[in-house]
Image (cartoon, rainbow, N blue to C red; front, side):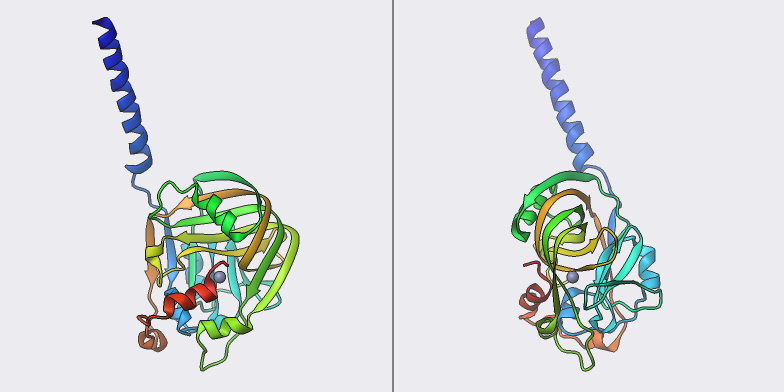
Length: 266
Ligand SMILES: [Zn+2]
């Protein structure tokens, strides 16, 4: 009888502990959010102008990525420093009056941390990162500080009006390679169901530790790094009040493919 009571108490305690654990992981309302300007399929359709300034964007986060009016280079933001990556890979500070046709930022507060070693390509890196997702149906902000054996980076060249589609613009993108550098991958992962609004899957921009070089990541060979991730439970999207955004055909069937081609990791 006493044994029975003890085992009942133990089972109850175990149940309580499991319940408490699941509540602490899944039952909590979390306010971590990402703020995005426009949609990736608008960028794919050649909507490279906009009405949203970096001055306003900077109030929504200290970490993120994006681009500029006329897709004049890539943007990377880390620890509150916003940089424009020019077509030779060098950085200059963003000014408040510059316009963004597409950007994503968050006030980065990572709660998940892992160490990564020797991941020779983007695909392996992606597998190891996503293995640490406690929830596959929410986006994540992701930062990896580490040493990189090799990186293949690109930056868009400034386009002139009438703007070409992003897939065409990416055909003459500037590509550069870095070897044995320390720095950070800065980016996001969105579940497949966000396709068209955000880049589905991984999207990373790189910045060297000394903040002198960077680019959109096309391929990566990681030596070792510290992975920090923030699960994102809110997505806020600003939709531009511009003629070009109003006229863009965002339902075109080939859009998802062209986004993958121009913005995908590999
Ligand atoms: Zn990019």
